Length: 195
Image 1: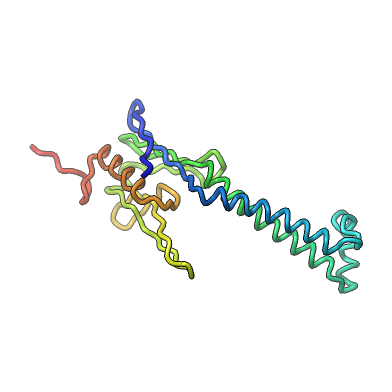
Image 2: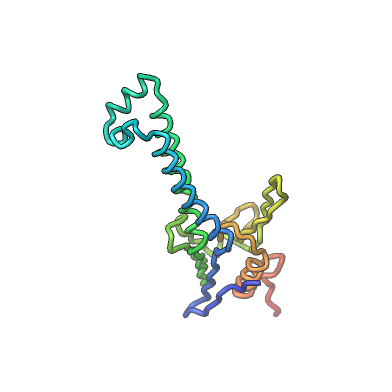
């Protein structure tokens, strides 16, 4: 089990969570190979049909559409397929390299992700939450059910999501325990002080 990287800072704690999972290295390799295969298919399918001219000359593209040739559709297929695969590569790169940094201070929680640009950072004021929860999400496929988890700060019916979905629930529960300890929270909210 991976443990969170917890460091003391001058007025609080910093917790770093890596998003890494080995499966994304495999997906990255498959996506890059798929782009190469897609381009090879496009070039092969349009070999001898002025493929290069069609990319740079819109008039020949429009002429081919009017003539009801398959060339424009093959080119559109190749371009859309490449776009989808590039988005997949971006997602896989973020899952391989990114981490979430949670900085907890007595006044607020700051959340940021990087180095690959992802969602905008978030600041949650201390008055906006009374507890932390690890939320479960089940994804059902033909091969079975995969469970994903994320950490959220909650108050009544208000929810502030702090992490992306990760498959390691034990890691997120360890982060929850660190935050509970820092903010002196119990399962039912803030700990009561003994007088």
